[in-house]
Structures are given as structure tokens and as C-alpha cells.
Image (tube, rainbow, N blue to C red; front, side):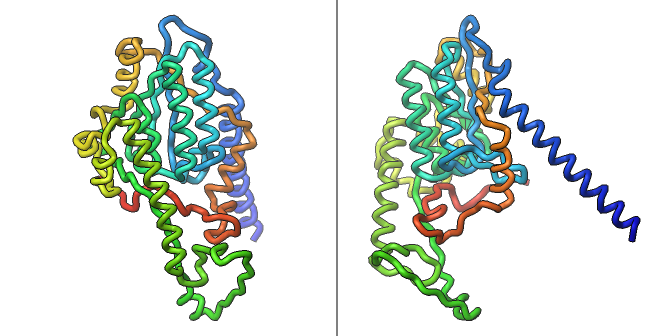
Length: 320
């Protein structure tokens, strides 16, 4: 028994030491800001790289120890404001690997990109594995979009998804009582079927958000709204997206940096700086909790619809 306790203690100790090491590494990255990567102005100018990795939502980005990264709009907006204050940076490459996110978060980031463009800074989107839906909303604000032939993109659409668990609750003998201030306050609850009036209200929300999405893409890409509607919210490969006018050229991250250098007048091999998020080290603990599912709100939490308007596609393409 004593031997088992010793082994268990060693395993626990090693686990705690590993977690501490990760925390220290993260704290150095966060507390160090841009470090040498974002040093003062250099002759000729530079291209800044901003990562958009994971589901796009409001708030701060979560590093996510166990996967499931979240890109927070507040974090990205702060990074873009760093760019606007650095006269050395003449162009930005958005390195996108995201299935999408909420409309408001996508709009917040897009607004900052449009401000940068007005100040004369060039924007290039570089699409990785996936840059769909809300992520494409953001990319559409770029001066140029570079994708890989196998990138999954498009998915220009909006979806609200709710569940009805009444059959399951009946089998388990679970009942509930709802006290509400108005007929529609518990719209989307899992505890009863949706009414026709509620479906109409949700549909009106989807239609209005979809129109906002289409207007943003049409304005950014200079293509007609009819052409966007004809896609019917489908996902596309990078090559198909180029044929549809949603992407400008094929290439990887290095190609996108070269494009950014060219359109910003820096040449095909510009200097590159990584625009790191400025975060306090203790924010990393938020990422641990959210990635482990510890602070995920209930789907029918009072006062809102958690995940109701996520924009990412419902299919994934895998290669083997």
C-alpha cells in the first residue's frame, strides 16, 4: 500500500510540475508583450501578423490548455490598435484558422480592420485549414485573400439551433416550472416545443443577421449580393471559392506575407513582426477553465442564448 501511495504521489507531483511549467511559459509570453518582435520603427517598414485561431466570440482570447481555442474579439481589437500606433507596420496579415463564431464578435473585428484600411494600412487574409462563416466575414474586409486549394471556407449564412428534450424528460420523470415576465422570455427552452410565433421571431433574427453578413461581404469583396445568395450558405474549397470570387489567389502564409509586402510597397520579402496579445499571466487560468468545460454556461441560461448564432459550418473535410 505504501508503494502505491509513493507512486501516486510522484505522478501527482509530476503533473503539478508540468502544469506549473506551462503556466510559467504562458506568463512570460503574456507579460512580455511584443518583446523584440515589435521593436521600434525600422527603415522600410514591416508586415504584422495577427492570428485568429479557434471559434470567434466576444471577450478575451483563451489559450486553452486542452484544445478548443477561442479567439476573443476584444483581444484581436487590442492587437489591431497596437498596429495603428506603430508607424513601422505598413501591412497586416491575418492568419486565420477558424470555423467562425458569433456575428457581433466578427463585426467588432471587422470594424477595426476597416479603420486600419482607412489609415492606409494594407490587410491580407491568409486562410489555413478553415476560414468559414464568421471567419470569412472578417476575411472579406481584407484587401487581398490568399487561401490554400484545400482550405474550407464560405459558409456565408446564419443558424440558430435549439433542442427539445421533452420526450427524454418524460421518460426520466423530470418536470419544471417556469415563471416569466412575457410570453417569449423562455424562447428556445429545451423544456417544451417551439411555437409557430417563436419560429417566426427566430427566423426574423436569422434573416436580419444574414442580410448584415451579405452586405459586409458584398461591400468588402465588391461582388453582388445576388451572387452571394446563390451560394445558399454552402462551404467551399479554397479553389472553388476563388472561382466564386470569394478568394483572390492560392498560396500559403509565406505567399500572403509576400502579397502584403508587395501591395504595401515593401517588396516581396518584407520584415515580419508577430503582434502578440497583451494579457496578464493570470488570464491563462481562464483558458484552463473554459477548455475543460468548467465555465461553460447552460444552453438555456436565463437572459440569453448561449451559442445561438454561431456561424461555423456543420461539416468538416478530412484528408487521410
